[in-house]
Image (cartoon, rainbow, N blue to C red; front, side):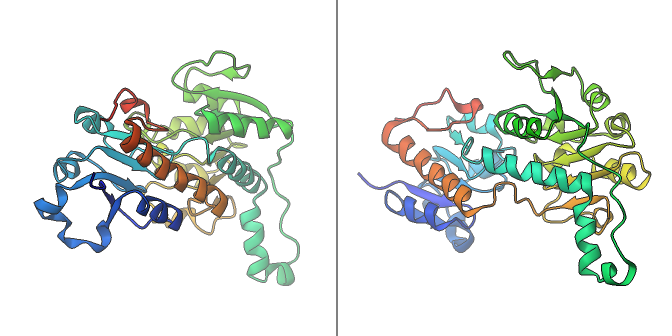
Length: 320
């Protein structure tokens, strides 16, 4: 039987490319301008991607596509409804990056509360030598309450770590979770009112775009810190900038942004903002585990008709 053709939508780690090459024929979209020709496109049965938009127009180019394998937990770039309507499986890479992202979230939270980013720039700019010690940080973890927006596996791992720092925990999501002892808040505004540190750990969806709004930030208050380890689209960035400039909240720690890799200048070089370049899961160890899961999903789908980690919207699908 001929090997299925897999399209690499963007550059892939060696563990992905080498692993797939053992089972499939590969084409690299970024090196294959002839991919738009109908004969070659008709051969494509699988696509791997990292944050590449997959919409109905994209799917129209590949009439025999059977699976879209995401190198990510978040899959908001993929139109899952369009895929499901065409019986195309969609997979992601959950769980294997949970601990790494949770570690990053805690580091980012501490850095934001204590203004480590500004302190580092103080040293690097020579101001420690010329002006003396960095000003005392107005924020501390002592007595803080963490409000987790999105209590999935990553949110729970973050909350567990935060408890070790003596923080109280509350959360908001689509519904109250059974077996969870943390206080549940019905709305995001209520969550912000119940805590002084909001941790965004939810995937980006059309429903929660700009969910962290002026009202949420005002409810968080002058001692409040926002940390976003989820998706940039969840935060209304102009509202956040206004809140930071106006002293409505104390600070922010951001690993994700609305228009990556472009970061609003107003969020750069601010003593009360810590920015990271979307590195929540970016260790070799964890990215290799994610890459292997991409390979495992594709191999399993074509060999057994079942995916290892299907997304909920296409979990009902089975291959031949």
